[in-house]
Image 1 (tube, rainbow, N blue to C red):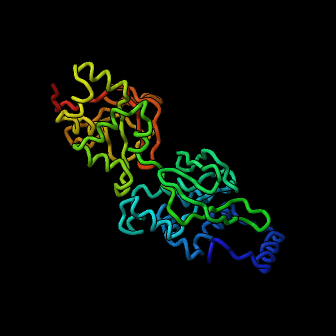
Image 2: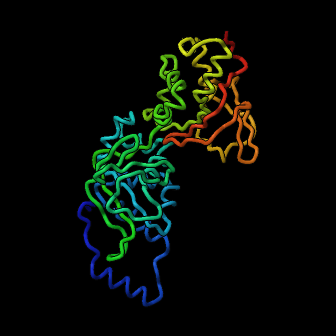
Image 3: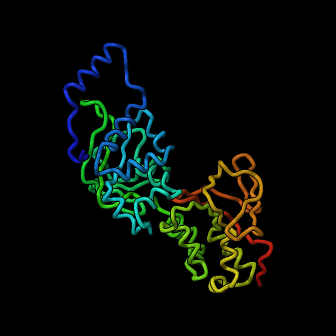
Length: 321
């Protein structure tokens, strides 16, 4: 089956559907997802996407609602084209990534409307971040940009309620933590400069796309927080970036896994610094603090979340001048 030119619903199928309706038998609310997944499942060009949806059960469940849905559907060729961007050896490595559900959810541009044609502008995704539809409506951008080559209408003939936008040139990737931070220059430029230091090359990679899909939570000091820290130490940013403890300081702000503010629990949390460097997190209603630093509104990323904080945190065992 080729999604570019899907076969029409047969006359016999329509007759069966009408007979079921007369008999009082109706398709369940999950029919929209079944039809959408059925088309993907029956396509010889979308075997990797089929395997990915089957592997990410929460995504498959999310698509089991009544819809309507608007989804970007990358072909097998698109997954192959994205291997270099992801630093993956093959499709199996992509399917094994912990952030696979995040990637798939980012392909669902709308879980409550059918958008065909796509209209230029930002669109909310099921993942929570926005994807940007370019001016001509044929390109959709996140960390990568894909070109929509065709559409497949999904649903009962004559009343299609969902649509698949097929792409062959890449998969639509949400921006990773490092890119999210680097684009927020007014807020995180000092932190990004630290991540760009040679001593933190492994951490920078871990917050990017070529990290095997690992998820991270970053309690990210803002530029104002760094300015206050530098003033207190009597040094400038150049001296900070040359500090032999810089890597330890930055690692102390990063946790493995994705922890949204709503999921923070009061207690100690391990950091990339190691077992001796734990953060003290406190949840008081909706407010969250980390070692006493105030956490402001979180910023989503494709492989984690960034929590802006108003102080630079220091593990007790790190001595600085």
